[in-house]
Length: 95
Image 1: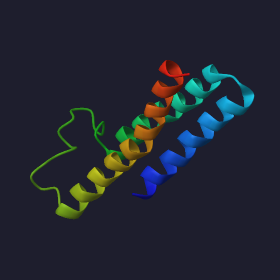
Image 2: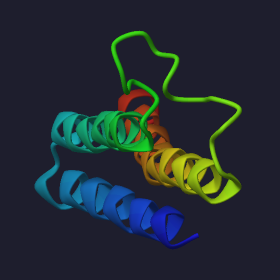
Image 3: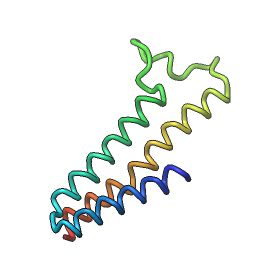
Image 4: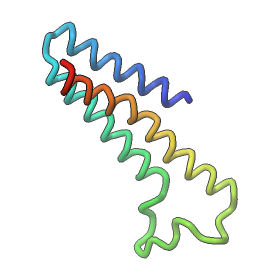
């Protein structure tokens, strides 16, 4: 949940920057970039793209702790990205 709170704070900061500078396009770009970075960060550090054949990422010999850690990294990246992507949509459509 820490990453969700960090994502909410960064989304709020990007929307506040857009409000105070009266430039909603900038808020859209900042929040959108942070959202995309969060998704890429979650995918890269979770090990989903690991290996040339792709078979190394999930095997029957994978320990539960390794699987839980991999899933936690992926989930944390998406929890950070979700509020930022929602803020980018809000800056694009509402404002």
